[in-house]
Image 1 (cartoon, one colour):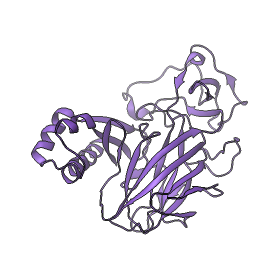
Image 2 (spheres, one colour):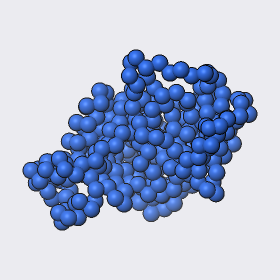
Image 3 (cartoon, rainbow, N blue to C red):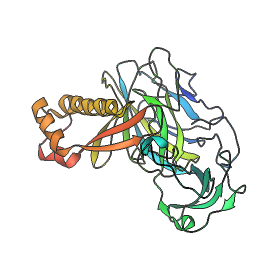
Length: 324
């Protein structure tokens, strides 16, 4: 159970079977950094191309297809004082006949991070989508400049190498994880990922200081991160889709389009998990889901949408359902 400090010098905008940057054992912890979605580091310098560049991949000793890994997000925090968002809700979440009546052509909002109070607020706006650092636009005015929101740091994109030698764009997601943009994959959460290739090859990036459900403007507050995570290997434990848990819920993820396919994948994976690991029969699980399931939206913007199925741990406790 070693601790590794890793400083990245190269990044990938696909998740695939790239040469690993570090080999780790089950139980090891890694401290590293990620650049923002636009490829800027903690100083604001452009160090790689944009498009959700990933740190990694990390090779987990002994991981083979059919296994799974868990990743505990021990620490997630922006490491610079500014981030950026888009400024317009995506058309696909609006009525077709709705036409916004903006009196400006703002494309970017620049946000200031208050680390002491763990908040973010808009400080600058720009007409240029390429502006991802302050100093090029105009000061934000009221009421926008009065908006103060609590930080909720989380990685928008992470995953393992997919099967069949694929290298999948960090713009999208599938069974391997990817650009899920789910804001509750935050600090303290454990995520579970299927293993498709030797070593699993875990990637991580696309830090968000905070984000609303659905990522409906196409961004969270995009920013570079300090991250620390711990990886465990689960031999012979096969899962079909990403899973996760926090203090209050277990959750399963579906990534697809159209949206109903996401719901199908996430709900079916939850049924599998409750039957295989919690000792519940399928009839009980169906009734349980009907009255206790909770659903979250990860993203409604990317090529594949992300939908999350959740069950409160408290409900499982009332059934005496403990994990095998």
